[in-house]
Length: 356
Image 1 (cartoon, rainbow, N blue to C red):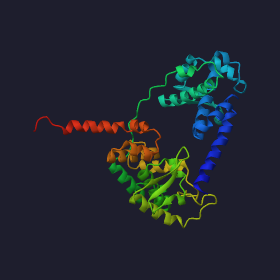
Image 2: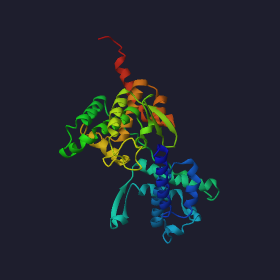
Image 3: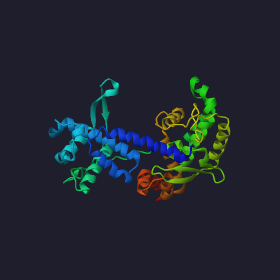
Image 4: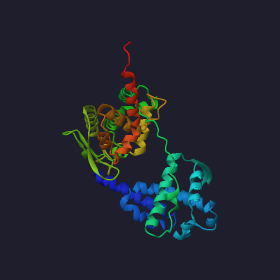
């Protein structure tokens, strides 16, 4: 299976999921999702579908003019009854709400949204209104009048240099693992070390790591061919530490009897199948908790560790943005602004007005 085949399979899965989600949305949403397909990823559209379903379910319950209606009978003209006030009330509502879960015996499940969750849902609503307003199928766009929640930037969670060293030591030795974990460590530690070194040494996303094939590794140039979120193929280069761990793992991999359909996958599970995103997340968490109890380290935090280290060493925000695959350098600049602030603070200690 080529990497393109893997990503094609993922696209097919997402297409089927979106198709299923559309059956739980008003009929006019079919046109909306068809219209935004050329400019959005499948995962973005799936996120919009989930968020819009929550919005419409809220309106059917709380909007006075919608209480006698049902999801499948909603028409685009019904959207004309929605005002900016209704959307603002929805944003306030999703701060905390409960919902009956059909797969759990209709148990009431509590949900919460911080400003990021609210922003994502409001972005979906805005895109929906904007689409039909531009096509002149809606007379107004009340969503454009609703302010996006203020996002409070979070401190970058990352591993320090000594923590990275201890993490790699733990993966190699497995000394701090439980007895149950140690039974599997003998079989997986070479794979685990290579995988973590790839994440820490290249800054690729966990989804990009999952999609790697054995043929995507080129030791002649020390490069990995990865497929970015938008589908673009790029080559990311790695150092000697990553090279050595990959070579050791790939040599071991030759002795594995791989399941049909997964022959090309670089990183394999104990069942000799392509590792999943969830499996890599659990793997990272298992080792990270051995070296830090206060930091919630995920594959994305290893990506932040790489980006922080690269920026500290080079000071080149454009290089960091390019390697991390950020389309907008301002995204990178905002994310690593606190490092610049730390540099500016250090200047206060360097410049002395009087000699001691």
